[in-house]
Image (tube, rainbow, N blue to C red):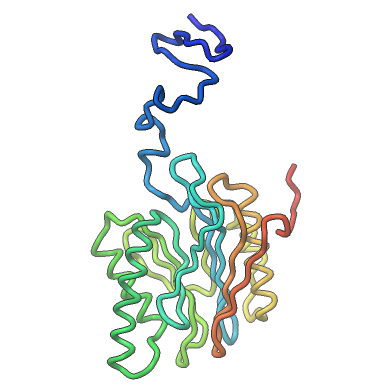
Length: 242
């Protein structure tokens, strides 16, 4: 019932006709391919850590369509205000929609009050969008700085639950690093310690999670503004790989 495919000869495999070693696209039904029908998904590793004076956020850069890697270097750190960023995981379309909508709301709010918006204002607006639209596949981490609370981190889970945390992790890769983060996080870390903590944690998640990968992008946000960094895949910290 089975014959090995050889030299582009059409053969019958389990009752279906296949064309092996053939590059003739006309003979293939593209609609049957998984990546033609799946939405862009950010099976992701995202993270944010607050420190005294600011916040460090980070994410991997892999975007998938089913099992197909659609983008190796996507940017999952999205600004919604000058000093407020969103780390996005879930459906790329849903998270982009929510982020763009909140950016518009915050611009209007900032114009109305005459000063930059608070981090908790942006976080609660996002929470409202996700809560009132439960079909959205959006799990978000909001990190930023304002003059009242300094650096702060808010986590919005699927369904719209919001919590304020000293640090937060999310995405499919986060399940591999809960132990590492619990063991290595400590209160009152410095900026450099937070940046190293984020890069190490995301590197571990990317090494274990097949839906995470690419490069590590980070953003450090404080009173002076935002500093973006990128660590290429071949320069990430290497841990024991078995």
